Image (cartoon, rainbow, N blue to C red; front, side, top):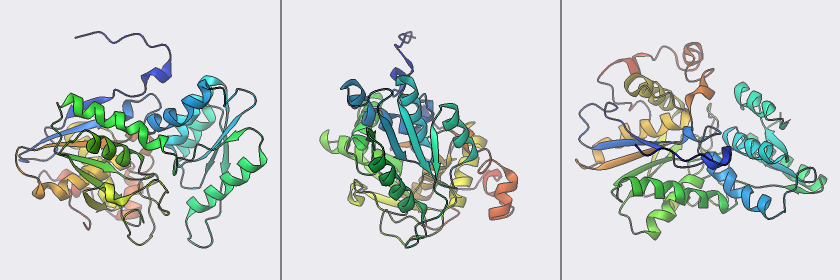
Length: 338
């Protein structure tokens, strides 16, 4: 085994995450399944790539200066942590606008990085969603603070550009043989960047977008969602639903079952969006020709969901006693509506 090089700093550890076989996930499934484990990024998620892409050029170009500049962003958690790590590394102030759905653990992580947390407590009166209210608060802060910079993950092309590298890593590891790629959607950065690489390199990959029930990204009606980071109440400016060749909608319960199945069958403790793509594969499996190669992008780890997805009491409170859905050996994870 070739030894890994010594890195100059923690930010050099972003990217080149592990691609692993999931041999036991779907019994008797006649195709190969692999997972891209983005939780191995140093900040714990795929959003490290986007954060670095949106900030590093400005830092190195002298546009973001320690003691004089402030980064302001809206985030439900993972991007905030990626930005927090970068800002702490370079000594730049960061204000993160969050809402009550942000988990206690993520809030503790942000405060450990000395982030100023600005909590929006009231949803947007027109939509009933927190995201428009968070974005309005970001605009207020940027207008009031000299030297403030809003990366704006929802409209910044550097967000999806980061994920052309994500797809390149996958394609190179598999010599270009990627028949199906499953991506969860939020800002659309990962899906868009992967789609751009697939198009530009002439790959025959079918890109499956995995969205949440209650999300508006692919034109569905807005509705309540329990899990942050998957789906959106407002379609981001950079999101183009046509980039996905296929779409699978999953419920919050699907995410729980997908996550619990991963720990049961693969010993992988993954986050909610990873459960979503896992459930989507189970839903889509009968449409995949035998002998295909399928890759699931797992955006983050499960340790940020210990109070929700992996908490039995929380699961029973929201869904009842559903443990049979991942404990029965023959279940297919198809528990919601496609």
